[in-house]
Each structure stands twice: as C-alpha cells, then as structure tokens.
Amino acid sequence: MSTLRNTNHKSWNEIKINDSWALFKIMSEFVHGYERMSAIGPCVSIFGSARTNPEHKYYKLATEVAEKIVEHGYGVITGGGPGIMEAGNKGAHLAGGTSVGLNIDLPFEQHDNPYIDKDKNLDFDYFFVRKVMFVKYSQGFVVMPGGFGTLDELFEAITLIQTHKIDKFPIILVGHEFWDGLLDWVKTTLLDSFKNISANDMDLVQVVDTADEVIDILNKFYNQYNLSPNF
Image (cartoon, rainbow, N blue to C red):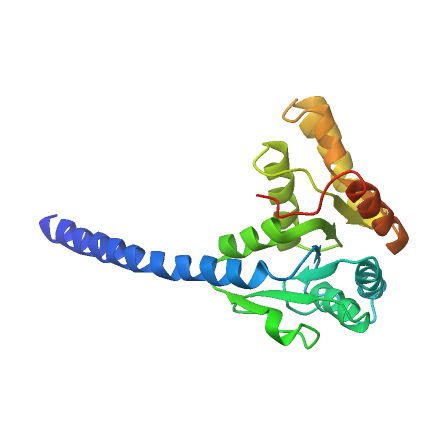
C-alpha cells in the first residue's frame, strides 16, 4: 500500500508541475489571440461540419452566406478547417473581405483551408481559448448543419447570452430540415415538460433557409445596436 501511495504521490506532484507550466502556454494563446483578433474589425462566425464536401448544397449555401456577409461590411471567422469552415472562408475570400481561421490541433479532420488570409490564420491547442476568440470578436453566429463540435459552439453561445455573461448577438441557424427537430425537442422537453429553460430563451436563436434571410437578421439587429467586442 505504501508503494502505491508513493507512486500516486509522485504522479500527482508531476501533474501539478505540468499544470503550472501549462498556464504559460494558455496565457500565451490568449495574448496572441487578443493581439491578432483585436485588429480584424466586425466579423461574423460561421460554424458547421468539417465533413461537408464541396458538392453539398450546404457547402454552396455557406459560401453564398459568407459572400453576402462580406458584401454587407462584415468579415468572416471560421474554425479554419475543411467542410463548412472552408466554404465560409472561401466565400469571404471570393468577395474580397476579411477571412479569419481559428485552427485547432486535432488528430483527425482538421487542417488549414487555403482561403484564410495569411495574416489571420491562428492556431490553438486549447478549445476553451479558441472559443473565447469566437465569442469575443464575433458580431453574430451563423450555424450551418454540423456535428458535436458545432452543437458545442452553438450551446456555448446560447448559455453565455442566457446567463448574461455576454451581450446578446444574433444566433442564426441555417436549414429548417436540420434544426427543427432539435428545437422541437428543446421546446417540448426542456421548456414544456421539465421547465429547465424560460420561454424567452427560445427567442435567442432564429432559423432560416437562405443567405438573404441571414443578412436581414444581422442588419436589423445592428441597426439598433453598436458593433463592438462582446465583453
């Protein structure tokens, strides 16, 4: 038993030492991110699956959405990878606007796409640092169909607005066929059956099917509010 205690104690000490050094890496990612992102100007984040191929209708729609976002005075931020992220950067690039990629080091799927501005391609090791950059410097979230990562980013934004940790900004879900089932479950289960959210929480997201509807929501919102970092 004493040997086990000694082994565990040694391992715990090593973990504590590693954690202490990790703080410097985390701080450096925040500092680097703040310095680079503070100069990009008003942007809208586009989220969605890394697995969506260029022939898919949602890849093409995400490209169109990004082009229109740029044409209306915003830049585009994505996760910097393939699929919907690539489509978002591609649309921004084609329209001659700001195209930002916030890449994350993953064992599969993630790699830089070629449509990111060379001076706006950032790499992160920590998901939580990357999330801060998305939320702080985005004037809105456009959420295309995606997987767990996309849902994580969506519900992170909803939670921060719901709890008043950040100011409200538009969260726009694209594709009724994809999102309606989830929102029906949120309403019937979270709201109606279990009372785990408030009725006005349902108003934090809007669902559309076209690029023009995305732009209409963004423009109407920012006709009332000033563009600025969210916290």
